[in-house]
Length: 475
Ligand SMILES: Nc1ncnc2c1ncn2[C@@H]1O[C@H](COP(=O)(O)OP(=O)(O)O)[C@@H](O)[C@H]1O
Ligand SMILES: [Mg+2]
Image (cartoon, rainbow, N blue to C red; front, side):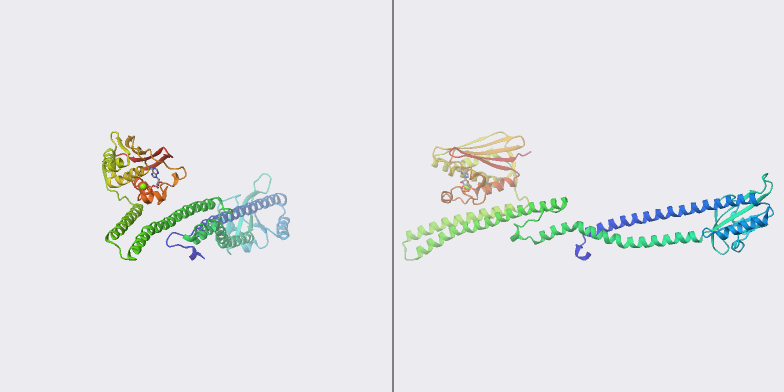
């Protein structure tokens, strides 16, 4: 039963630990309670027996006073008194000042002599003391001097003793019961403890059991949260939240794979179709050149797509692969302006750069260039003749804000939330013509995240789009 619970070297299972704590505590409690009860009982019995001994002494003392002169009567009283008692068999001996026994309870001389008692008393006059007879029987006794006459000239000695065998039997009986109770507690405390502990952690096992059953194909399953104690319900909720996220990223991943297959299929099909048509009959060299040209175009698009996918895959693996250098972002923007100048003027679009002071950041230059050029290329392809594209960089406290603003077509509010999704294209037909695969903004976002920055898009349909990139400034 325990072996199933045990996991490699991770300490004892919870049920066992709880059982150990519970049973130790409850056993100690039982032991302490019975021990205290026993001690209380023993003390009580002793007190009562002592009190009765003293009472008996007082009775004898009165007897000496009343019957002191008549030894025969005294002896009779002493012997009769012992004969009528059933419990607490007192033994009484009355001695005159010379130590001669005047009256003795029958059997007392056999139990212990007057001298033996005198010796055991050892000066404790009028005090109850404990002794063992020569035969090994335990007694409680008291010795006192009593005046026979009112003047107190003649002092007699009273020896009163009581056999403790019965009292010790009673206590022994109790000790046996205590031993039985403790032995039972030793068995039942761990047993009941284990049952309680198992009941307590049962929901935990159920949660673990459900979690074990969930695989990538059953990610839609959830752990039951009602009917559990608060803590376990919280655990189940946490688990369900995690499943929710897992399900989401699994769905995204499979959508992504489907998209990849779809994106790769189109150019490959194009190449195949054109080649098949070209090979159907003999063609002129010009026709072959045309087909090869468009095949090359498709191949270039394919390799760009693959390169983008590889980039995204690589940049997703954990770890900082950035080759950071101190870069002036104003200078980078100026470089981009140079690069896109020709295309912009061909399209009749004005491209301007505005850069503030101290726009220095520690970045991977190649990656930031790639991200920014993706943004400028988007702005260009969505701008009409006469449009304006403004690039700007400015320092804001510990950050640098780079903006790419255009006066182009803008993005619809429905499309805006999906703009950074991989393969998402606002207008697929137009986008593919311009070579866009829908990965551009995904790559931008990835690069900016890698640098510990953030990127946001604001857009008004018909008015234009503003992309804002925030990067940590260099110290
Ligand atoms: N500056 C912009 N103006 C208008 N629409 C834009 C702009 N930038 C991006 N978009 C929209 O976002 C979509 C995704 O952009 P992107 O990820 O770069 O993919 P691609 O450029 O390959 O289409 C584009 O298809 C386009 O619809
Ligand atoms: Mg793009």
